Image (tube, rainbow over all chains, first blue to last red; front, side):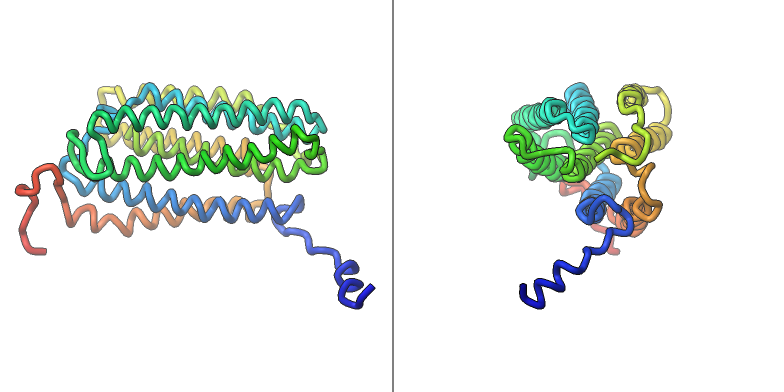
Length: 205
Length: 106
């Protein structure tokens, strides 16, 4: 064994001070804090444009509240199934992990399908990135950018969770990997949390 | 691997989130001032976001410093809102009828 290899194996990696489970969990929290600032900047910009405008339409009169309320219900439900998937693998229940992870992914896919339907419907009614018949042109611009940015996060989350589902189906996820599932769950819950704010600020307010 | 903290009642949190969402939708139809509706909606949204962060993301059971990291974006975004306030009040704009846009010098 070389001198470098001997030193490398001799030194224990330092424990993460805030998340003793893993450095990865701390890394995910720092990433989510940074990502939250992206959404925060978009929502703050939305507020500045909206309240600086004199002809901004009332969102609830243009956008479908019923559909998006159901989409909110879907994301909240998928957060519950995600947390149940984590509880299952923490107990070593691989079957429970597969079931609840599948339901979470299904919830995410249904959300994306409904968002595609909503966008198509609104585009047919004349709401585009550059203009609309309801009032301020920036209403459409901000709507598509904010909901699109969130939709991209949901898409990323579905791909992220699908990778773990494939690993679980191949039997490569065990109780010892529960921390990796917890990190993925943090991302998924964040996507749910952001939607709660987007639903309020873009659709209801 | 088992969690070191007691499992929260996740289904109970789900029912709270659902109830708060229904209240939010009901609030927008209340015959009260828009400002009051806005305050209620922001309060309800922050309550729901807190429930997700505290129980689903287990922030309630994590180190306090991790909570501070999670709160940082909220503080910075509130500062950003205040930083943008002069723009909101100084430049009212209208995009449907460009001829009506104010031409007064700044």
